[in-house]
Image (cartoon, rainbow, N blue to C red; front, side):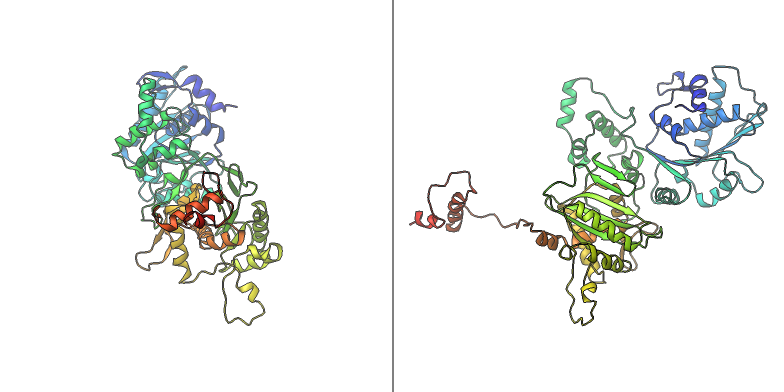
Length: 532
């Protein structure tokens, strides 16, 4: 149901469209969704030019016109943007489809509404300090990811907004900075803020029509794998969307990373890492089939499948809303990520029950648990409720302790095994293993080698729990195949078809039904007979 503010905007306000025409302000899809879902403490990250600022300015203008004692404040990142925002509010007020607004003051930074005793201030970050003694009913921090010292500047602003007030932090991405950390904190469920993300795929204006079917076919034939167009087309993007994307890429000098930041498909693409990840090449495929089943679980549609063989890697957190506990599930035969479970609220002993349940759900999957820290608690519980032959074990020598059967469970990370395991995952992700989780790809993007300590870990302020669960999965991949009876194909050099061994193999294959010619002889050794 439309909010009262939306009804006023759409019935009284005008806006200049992209052709420069004055038209009634009808909320677009992004604006309408935001209008429906605002909570009072909101973070908005999105693709460029979807109209978020235009909507918020109209929303605050309505409140100043119709709600007494409104103190609305919009802060932008630079003077040019501030001037543009101020002119937009003046346009709204000058072009109302109704009685003209009564203004007491109207200067370059402020509008005053005497009938409602309300004020609308629009300024630049750092130009005016807010804090004790100020009261702000409605605050919008525009493009806050581009502010200098946002932590310091927002401290006074936030304290000036009462609990009943509105705070909207809005920006396109700009690396892993203060805004990124606010988004991540809110996404993890910490604090009151709610994250809204608006990608470019669901914005109807972001597509380019073709003039003819011939032009459309010509574009289809020109899809460029290096620009990731073939992959995206296979994932479900339309040719019209890809045509818009290529046009914008041309404007950005074909900088894929910059395009993803300006026009993200996932929230992770908003925040490209500034560091050099060791996982710089991955077989990550975005797909609409990667679906959220519950707050903790994403599954690739169609899985688990009957008779498929699955393996699981797990990283264990403390369950006190700090580090995550993570379960990564892979289809062993197709080398593909099919599910991901993540929570920071489940204690290590209870996590064992989750692992057991998911393992059985995925056809009695092979499970590898990181054994460090809290992992030993999880493993001790897991061995009681899950088949022991389906739990990864390492070789332990010279152990006379009665608890050897516990101590040799799981992957124990040491200064030796950690680089090896990470190296195995790096090779798998670059050559054969497909992943679908945007959150995992984000963590891979920020997993670096520290230039001073040479430690392999997440970039400062980032997480690597999903990565470490994948490390456990990769490290035990071969053992999982052996335990579950899956035969991994062995690659051999191409055989010369004219050697004696090749001729014998070909004829033998005919007899065994492995060659598309019906067998003509009766015994397995008849190939040798035919050569004599």
